[in-house]
Image (cartoon, rainbow, N blue to C red; front, side, top):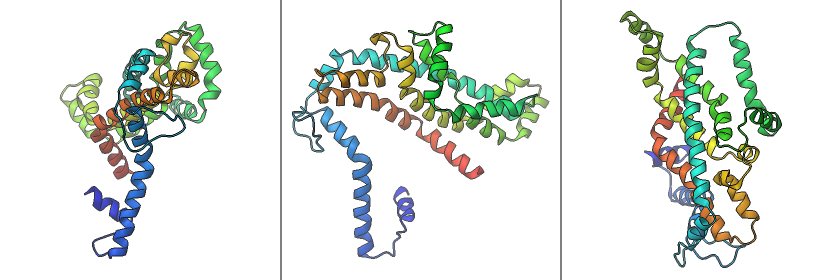
Length: 284
């Protein structure tokens, strides 16, 4: 099925001749090289002894775990644990805020609703560099500087997740909620038993994008961390890169450890993610 979809996108079908077939093979090879080449080079080099730091290899020679052992000696496991704590706490908070705010925006009417929507949208227009100084002052007033909570609380509300959830909830038929209300269910019961189970595709979408957004955070940990023990892995990679005693193999092994959670999270939630995207396309 996937091959037929790709062939259709490339304008190829069963009636195409040998020349088109060769073009198809070449094009597929180029696509694999472009998209999978850097990942393959990272994977192979992380498990290989890298003697020349200016060259990466696509073909494995000797297999070694020395790069990972050296990375663990540099406290990479601590940075990895910090990243998981920040992502876990931030994502739970973000999902809770998104479904609550999304339900209010989709189903309730209150004074100043358009202003609230405008303020939420405006947070998507401002680059994080502009917000860095005001955010650091607020976190300092809340005594969150130098704590992992300072990295968790700011990512708990994300405009993208709120708007995706609100738009998805608007498409849920009101008749379902009215039927539950006739059966005696209150707002909280309707939200928990009727609305939330139907929002799994939207939760898959905001889960994937929220995980990636929080995991890749660099500016926020840079503002909050006051000690190397509070570094997350993306921030620690920059520190390792500046250390002349750290070889490129150790950097690549650390980068692979930083990449794997995002890939695994996508594979785990890809069904809900695709359902969420498909639902949005059909409604659009």
